Length: 359
Length: 258
Image 1: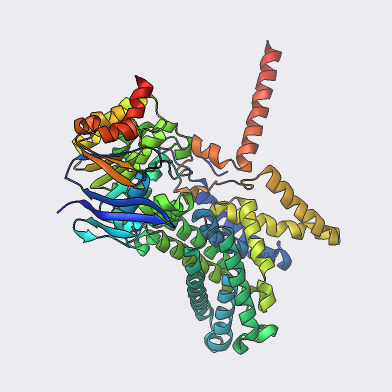
Image 2: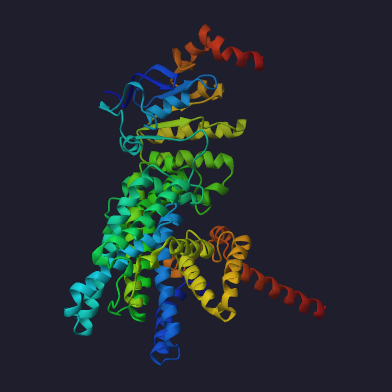
């Protein structure tokens, strides 16, 4: 998608330019109210869903475990950070700087709390795999949700309202970008490689000297922290959360974003989250029919693009600007590859036609 | 002291005595071969020596440290590496990545080094990549470094498995039927590689193999297993002439090929 040919270094730098340009364009459009509040919120939710979908990709895509309880981690971050800002930090949130410093602190603490829960859920993953692990994580996710219904400080079933509305476009954009960078650096290190070993062949990984137990726990904790930060952003955007916001349907949504986008790639997870958050909004004009059309879109995606819409492609900056070689391209096989192939064949067809005409 | 020692190890699965009273004392730099008919328990012995199974009784020692009950990766850190009879590569990873994954213990940096990409991290990563490339050229796989492992032809997958095992810097290398499914010229190639490894690295090899020609050509010492019990041990020439072995194993082979 993002490619500029540079013969000197054989690297692509387009995405390095696109990231800031996209930021300023969207920022300008939001500031001038060209994008109205409704669509602004949808853009922010796209980003937040992207963060959580990317965190799920670390567990499902990179480490090859199956987790169906991502909304559970998200709720921990959402609740803990919301309780902090509402009950503790609010009096100190006087000027802009303090507000955002405390907001970031609340996000981090919420993330760490989610990480702790992630550790607890990671423990059974040492013994279980596949469907069984999925069931366990589903159960854990529900357990966390039900837990919020009985904790008085979390407002029981009523939830928490009038949370300070501090999530804005700048913070979401920066966090999405930072999360991508951190996940990239993690996956491209020996830590990420041990996760890949677990996914590809756990026994072989273990005989290569990799502590697969530690790798799995690390992936769960890390993903939970990031999902918790996503939850914190969510609660400070909505200003209102209750336990049912984070039900198992929400967990399923993240699985859906990830697999329709392309499991195994953080960029695809983000793009999947963006597209499948926007589609139901676009389909709103259909009224109730959108609930029929939306699943149909999903089914067609899975039939015709089983590897996800964007396959395993990563943005240029996720590959340090290194080009994908032809083997990777073939393997990743995203929809973009298909489009570029179609365009190329069209162009070639035209050339042949002109050639024939010339003859 | 011996690199790897097994004292009277036995393992039972339910009522099945898969291996009984297996003894091994590995000499430095030798090529020790374990042979025996199908189902004799050879791979089970490997699994006990590399920590995948814990023996029901008996002791496995590496450098005089008792290894019973330790984790598989701890066995690897003590200097033992293995290949698998049914290839277990990291299929969706590239050939180069297969080696860098195995070079886990060379990455002596912390989590924050890798998240912040410090200079220490970069230096280490560069070193790992260089070592991996060197190993690939040793195994003549350097032209295929960006291939996905699962797309390699069979013979090269076998080679890559050995290369990956070598990437963990082992002192003892366990090869589980490396020549299975290979044609005679590929077997010749494999013998060449094993000899090359022995001459260039300070290494002891344990080999399970069915190709008798190959075992007789390269093994220093052979142990013969049948139904989990050791029936003979000695130099290749002794084994060839042992009546028990001929009866259990080689006899059949000679009838077939006579």
